[in-house]
Amino acid sequence: QKEVEQNSGPLSVPEGAIASLNCTYSDRVSQSFFWYRQYSGKSPELIMSIYSNGDKEDGRFTAQLNKASQYVSLLIRDSQPSDSATYLCALRTYTNAGKSTFGDGTTLTVKP
Amino acid sequence: DGGITQSPKYLFRKEGQNVTLSCEQNLNHDAMYWYRQDPGQGLRLIYYSQIVNDFQKGDIAEGYSVSREKKESFPLTVTSAQKNPTAFYLCASSSGDQPQHFGDGTRLSIL
Image 1 (cartoon, each protein chain N blue to C red):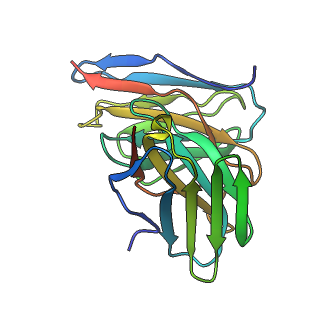
Image 2: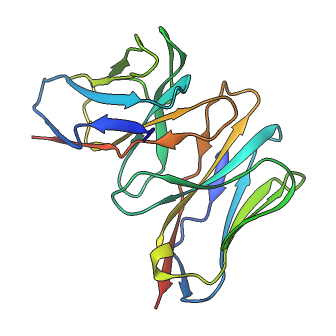
């Protein structure tokens, strides 16, 4: 089992819809969780960090963390074609010397 | 502006040649990382360094070497022992519990 699992997609949603991206992880002591957006041919860009259970909202983005169920999700409201990218889930634990573990990413396409 | 600078943006390697990818940061971050990304794949950790003059192997260190003589700099050498070096190489840095931030990457190809 991979440490971080994401559906590879592609996930396709119409413009204006809510896109839901999910990530599960295996290490129960995971501490910090991050979502990155990566456009084709570009480097990952941090869009959200979440450290405690519950929801965290930033503009059209909401990150949701449930440590008991070991999942973290990213909701994108009012999806725009410019949101079309690969979204990487990453986590950090107390025991991995500051390293982050990345999922393979979910590719999102928002259709006009 | 603070950030992470990777150079060159594109690099070509001849067979049997070692090449060095540059990574410089002015964010005063303690930790620096090198990742490799193959087309359609996730990030794989090559090497990381938490302090100057110290570094550790990641998951795919074979065929690569690094140095960390200065806090700001973490160059990666792709040696001739790396038989499949064509990939997108990403450098990142972080401080404390903060997330990693990435440079723009170097795309390496074989001639």
